[in-house]
Picture 1 (cartoon, rainbow, N blue to C red):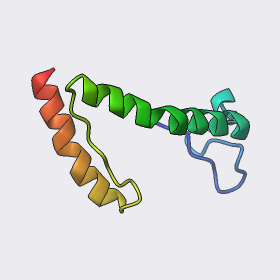
Picture 2 (tube, rainbow, N blue to C red; picture 1 turned 30 degrees about the vertical axis):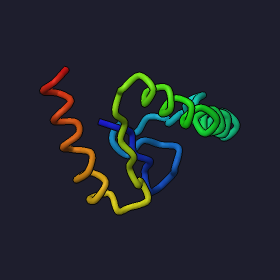
Picture 3 (cartoon, one colour; picture 1 turned 180 degrees about the vertical axis):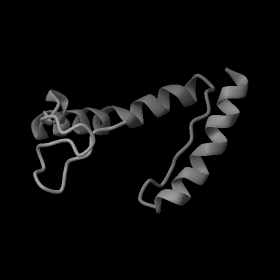
Picture 4 (tube, one colour; picture 1 turned 60 degrees about the vertical axis):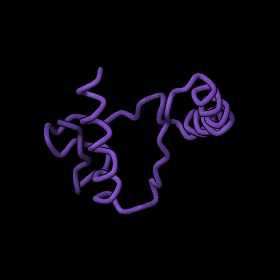
Length: 83
């Protein structure tokens, strides 16, 4: 079960009352670096996959969660049957 901050204090877990610690990977500078790396390489990866004859899918993640879930679910089901 993921940790949830308590309403009393944001650094205490609402489930187990333990002190919450941020993960190193959640640091804004590291998140920004990962985002830049993704942005810099995603088009090249798609191109390489296309050149190899591997189909890729594009998904508008700005859509509401229910819409995105409805688009992703069939892809995951199809993949689980072919893997």
